[in-house]
Structures are given as C-alpha cells and as structure tokens.
Length: 178
Image (cartoon, rainbow, N blue to C red; front, side, top):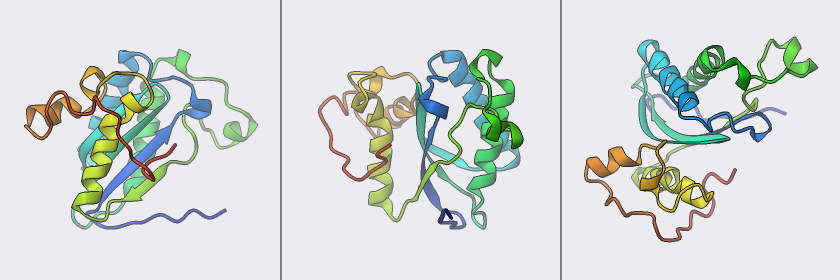
C-alpha cells in the first residue's frame, strides 16, 4: 500500500502518533519529559513551531508549523521517535518482532502516523480545540486544565482560552478519530 502525504512548504499540520499495541509508554511524567527533550533536541537542527500538543498514555496529538521553504515533517518525526527510543527508560522497550528486528526497529511506536494538512485558520482552530479536549474525550480528565501533559495552560496564559474551557461535552466529528 502506498501512503499519500501532503508536503507543503511552511505548512501547518495536525499529527496523531500511537504507541505500538497502544502500550501506555507515556503514563509517567518522566517519559513525557523525555519526549519533550526529544522535541527540543530535534528542533535545534530541524526547526518547527509546536503550536499545540497533548500527550496521553498511549498516543499523542500535536500541531506543527514548518519554516518557509521546508516541508519535511517526516524526517523530524523519524528523529523525534529515534531520540525518544534511545533515551527513554529501557523498561519501556518491548522485544521487537521478527519484522522489526530485520528493520532494526524498537517496539515503541506504531509504524505509521496520521497527518492532516491544516487548510485555513478555522481548520487550525478546530484541530487545536481537538488537541486540548482529547484528555476529556478519553476520560483522563474532567477538563483540559486538569490534564498536565498539554499545551492548554499555555493557551490560557496567553488569554486564548478561559481556564474552564472544555468542561462541557464537545463534538469533533471527523477530526483525528484514532
């Protein structure tokens, strides 16, 4: 099967990455800190803006904007995943299957990820809302403010959201259904 990706220089993209077999590798604050370090490390050599993010135990959603003239999010994701895998607690790594062994892959991440090019400001806003509401959707928190591994607080501090935003049921039909 051939996967089609939208490569738009300087574009903004929504991503969903899932752990291998939905294992809760991000259940600890330490693992989330290692992931944060992976993003920072990669952004030094391959800059991008991390516009919004939420990290749940078995998956993450985020929005990136790439620099003008640059459409290479795939290399950035490969580097983030590799950096995390090399620096995380070895206990998080499970035994790779034969196929993963041949490709020299660790069994931490699903091989593919979901990407959506954000078309306009409204599409961007809806996906930011989806990112921030995701812990409530999955029952991890009663409000976005209650979930610690999210950019939501940054948006509240910037005056974009009220602290109580997202406590009511929200509908995001067609966005990021993982």
